Image (cartoon, one colour):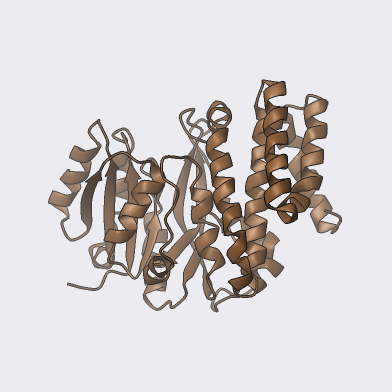
Length: 344
């Protein structure tokens, strides 16, 4: 059997409405599929998820594999999948998302000769309401070399859009050697996944291929406003897991600590946005933000200092009753301008 270059892990819980589309998107050319394996990890699904997944295993046994476990959440399914994959690299694709077939084939070809510990690829977002695609991509002058994290941090504005769950692919042996276990039973652990393991990488490559297609606009998603407010405690747990890694950052290679700090700060700022702009219970949101700041003051004054300016701005928006919708329209363009002027 030909060596598998890329393994895809598909965490799946009650995904019968979406799973066919995702699994069909992996049916690339027969020659390319010889280098691909797909692991559907059923996280205790109670609908037809298992039945659908098994039907692909029967039809394409050299490509598709199935594993069922007790329900433990998205992170638990990834943890289980990492133990099973045989590919040189692995990537996680959520069960309600899919891939660009042409991009996937190109990506597999690139990975075959790649020796980096992580590879960052482009992706697209698909809004189910507008049926519009939005491209998220990097903008580098040279895609044919490896980068160190220190170099990446120097070009952050050119790459940050893809330094995410949807853009990251890990070399399997590199990830396993870390023996890092993602939080289980919580949402937003994808922030852990894109932060802590990658902060240890010393060789990172970039691909111009568009691989992942991220489906947006479902009210049931964790990124919907109502769910963000309801699950803000999950985000707090993820922040605590990220902060706990601070004690290890002095052992990272150059740029690793800066990457961890940048990504962790961004998660904290997301917490402020949910508490102070998304949460319609204004008093509760203020308490949540204050509690987080008090905890940061005790555990990580460095992180608190890194986010203090943005906290004050969010508090200002909160006090003038700026809605999240208005914030998303007005503020990002202003911030981009300020960053270009190097005053933010």
